[in-house]
Amino acid sequence: MKKRRVAGMIGGGLALAFLLFAGLSVADRIEVTSDPDADDAQRRLALSKPIAASLTPVSIAQVSELPGPSLRLSGTAEAASVVMLLDRGERVRQVRSNADGLWSATLDVPDRPMAIEAVLFEDSAVNAGTDAAASAPGLRGVETVFRIHRPADQAAGLPPLIMIAAPAAPTRLVSSPFGGLPASGPLAMGAIDYDDAGGVIFSGVSAEPGRVRLYVSNSAIGETRVGADGRWAYIAASVMPLGEYDVRAELLPTDPAAARASVSVPFERLRPVRATEGADDEGALSVNFEPFRWQIRRSLVGGGMQSTAIFAPEELSAVPDLEPAPEPAPAAE
Image 1 (cartoon, helix red, strand yellow):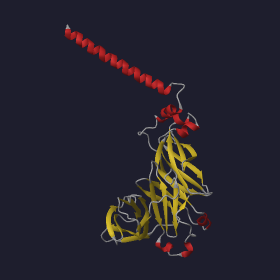
Image 2 (image 1 turned 60 degrees about the horizontal axis):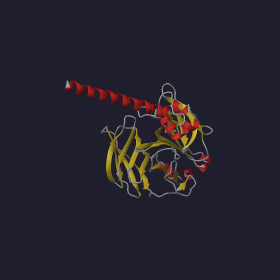
Image 3 (image 1 turned 45 degrees about the vertical axis):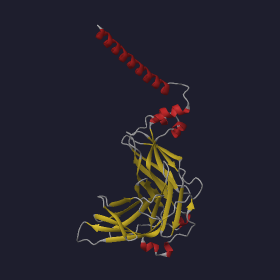
Image 4 (image 1 turned 90 degrees about the vertical axis):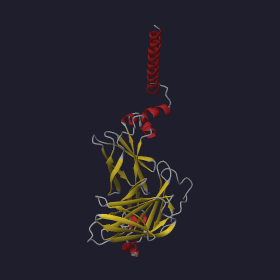
């Protein structure tokens, strides 16, 4: 008898706990979605709930320059979602991805450097209104498209700098103001990315399979394999001291009968200095222009700064007629 009474008390307690939990869950849902007097913070929280890690993030696959000039971007995202394009934090275009998750957009080019990033929103945020969509925390992409074209270079018919950059990843050069990359035989050196702590990413391309060995001031620091797509990249931490010195890449081809190739660039790691007050703010961008080397320093989403150095082919850097007019460096944009 006593055992049956204890069992009944336990069963009743569990039933009561279950009902209490269910009631709290329902109350929580009603509080978030049904309260007509919900403030802006609660409304933004409700709008942000569909943006989850399981969604396909927005990415930028291709960038091309069109007459006008205008910039054509295309990429992938969650199917049937809205992609908002920001230029240094300001909205410039909004497009919708199709059922396959593909999207594209054409942007007018202003008379200043561009830094385009993409943010993904679901219909629930967009249907709530433009202001709500702009303030709701969407799913931000990690890639940023940079376009820099000085008036003097444009007048001289030189191409703009167009690159796709992302934190902790090698920068992809779409167009170089120097018209080409430093190269020797099948091997070419692309951009060099580095942060204020001395971490660095070397990258380039090779028409021959094999391994690429990297040297800093004639000291080997490591090597990496050429990928199936012909691209190579090597990431190192705290190996780049301040100052100027040569960085060299050497191709060790897979075919023992093939000749080795080596390409060298005059690299300079600049001292981390704020160009202006608030230089770490979102969208901050400065460029150090030199006849044979450009260095682009920009802020990263979430904080911190990163620099990218691009180089002229050796034959171009030695021809004065092809050098753009000198400008103050660094020049805050």
